[in-house]
Each structure stands twice: as C-alpha cells, then as structure tokens.
Amino acid sequence: MKIASHILLLILWCPSIIQAQEIVSLYPGAIPNSRATNVKENSTLPANGMYNRVTIPTLEIYQPEKEKASGAAVIICPGGGYSVVVYQGEGIGTAKEFAKSGVTAFVLKYRLPDDSTMVDKSIGPLQDVQQAIKLVREKAGQWGIDVNKVGIVGFSAGGHLASTGATHFTKSYIENSNGTNLRPDFQVLVYPVISMQDSLTHKDSRRKLLGNQPSGEMVTLFSNELQVARNSPPAYLTHAADDKVVDVDNSIAYFEKLRRLGVDVEMHIYPKGGHGFIFRQKGWMEPLIQWMKNNKWMAN
Image 1 (spheres, rainbow, N blue to C red):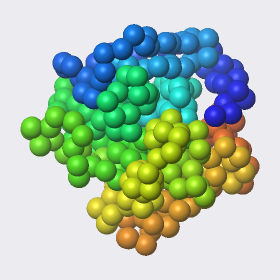
Image 2 (tube, rainbow, N blue to C red):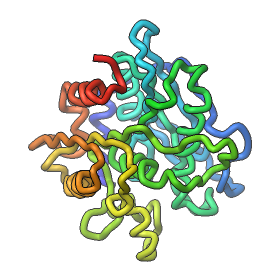
Image 3 (tube, helix red, strand yellow):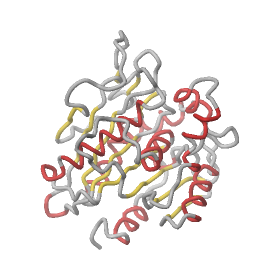
C-alpha cells in the first residue's frame, strides 16, 4: 500500500503518545486461531504511530468526563492495508475527539492477517472485532456504557474490518456461550475498503487478508456490499471523491445497497482530500457527531 505520504501526515499531526486511562487484553485466555510462532509484535510508537506484526490484540480506552458521558461507545479500527495498524493518528486521535464529545472510545489493536501466526488469517481480524464488541457489552456497567449504543468505526482497511463486523454478526467466530449480541448498533466508515471484487478492491488489502489467489467464494464472502441485509446497522460513510488509494465507489456501492434494503445511511463525500483526508480536513467529525445526536445515540 502506498502510505508514505499518509505516514508523514501522521507524524506531523500526532507527534507524541497520549496515555489512555486503561489498556486491556482482548482475550482472557488463549487467543483463538493462533499458531505458535517466533513472530514478534513490533511498535513504531511514537516515531510514526503504527504497529505491525500484531499478535496480541488489545483495547485502549478513552472515557469522557462524567458530566459529558452519553452512554454511547465506539470501537475504532484504524487502517493500514491489513499490513500495519495506523494506531496513533486514526486510532488515538479519533478516540480523543469522541471522548471530548461524550463518547467512550476503544482503540482496537487487532491482529494482522498472517499465515505464520494464524490457522486461518482471513478471520483473525474479524474474531478480534467480535471479541471487542462482546467485551465492551459484557463490561458495559463497569465503563458506564449503554449496551444498546455500541458502534464500530473503521478507516481504510480498518473500514473493511468494521464493515465486516457489521455484516457478519449472525455467525460467531469466537467463543460466545453467553450469547452476547455481536451486532454493532451503528457503523461509521471513513474512506473504507468495502469490496474484494477486482473492480473495486484495494488489491494490497485483499492480498494480505485473502492471499494471492482467493477463491470466488472468499471474494464474495468478504465483499461487504454483497453481505448487507435488512438488519444491518445504520451507517455513516465519508470519503473523498479524489481518493487515489481506495476508490470512492467502495462507499457509494455500500451506500446504495444499504439504501435499497431500507437501512438508514448517511454519506458525506468531499470533492477533494485524497486518502487519509481526516488529517487535512478540520471539522470532519462535526457532521458525524450531529448524525449520532440525530439518531439518539447522544443527546442534543
């Protein structure tokens, strides 16, 4: 993935690490779908704010001031082409802004698909998203969260992961003997990869997740515009029309499928901004926060 300019913007925008109130392990015991491996997780924090070779998934928690708390929560999936996790800029930076607005934010450090660390790399990130939703709902009382106001946010390839969580929730890929609801209450997708189809996909993301020659069945399964259903969560989409990395038609195709099935969806397309526009577009979260208020996940 051509992310050099994206990385430079991250360095300029978020030059230092901000400590969260709490970082928790995603799994209480063994991590499912894992292989014994010599691969070591690598952090490039604070230099350029990223993780690669992630093998130990976590949630980093940012809570609002008590008087501002709305009860809403978001699980944030940073992007990075399924090659790295752009943790600081898209993760921590966004979490701080949500917390300022009264939303408890969880930054997900998810496992990156790798045949050397996973039995089935295609489902590893999805398992982590489902486990994050499960954990947040089961500990909602501890964190002051309404179990019916838990959403998912994703950027770029993290948008593919978030939309996968929002379209594949009827099947549990994790241990869920309690029957915890794995459906996000809403989804927020920012310049997302949606499709694995040749005509739309970001090819590096598809290769990392599904391999060099995925079957037609796997391509269809992880083309999330083809997995939308009438009970898919309400969605907020935002993209730049001149995005040269992830074609805006990913968002448009997803919007159209949601709309046709009667799922509430709102989309904001900026004429310019390119990929990673959030680092250049001040105020991009303002219409998102208003959308959350309009839908009663936050108070006006």
